[in-house]
Image 1 (cartoon, rainbow, N blue to C red):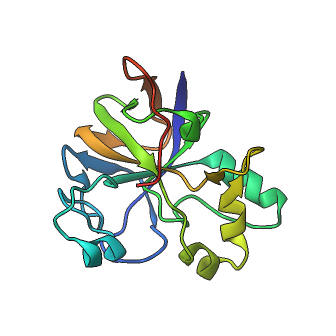
Image 2 (cartoon, rainbow, N blue to C red):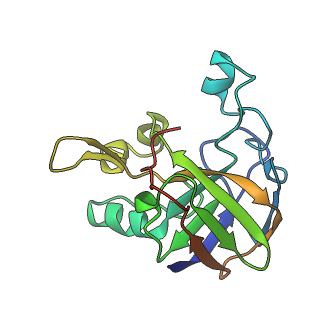
Image 3 (tube, rainbow, N blue to C red):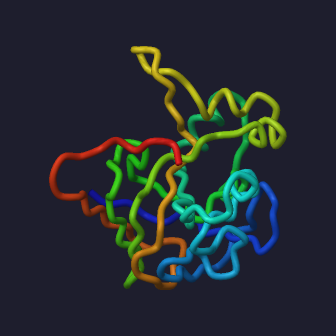
Length: 180
């Protein structure tokens, strides 16, 4: 299973969107160099307010380009980085991968998937009605979060658009991603 990086984004300031970059550098155990969400402990403001000592399981945020294609059909225009992700992908079923999956990106970077992004009202503040497109329900009525996956950096490296992504599934029983 493999895919491709279509865009990379980072922002040193708290902002919903993140500008696209020519490259980003992942730092082991921290996240994206220079990004406001990089760190060993939580950096998302709502989580810091609850407990600033909790480990940061949201160091790097991924969204699949296919989500942008899907919301476009519903009348929304969303570009890479606009939902706050660091890495936009194409060709991977990010939401279907299990917890603990390793993504090997480019020449050396490795991240481990920790969970799903829990979409928040900021998405509607960005474009009214978009949140409803990023959260749905499956045929059994269970909540389906579509706004990407979160990860931690195991091995650092430089990431650029066009870099390949190789999936390495965890051994043993696979656990579905849950909101982190």
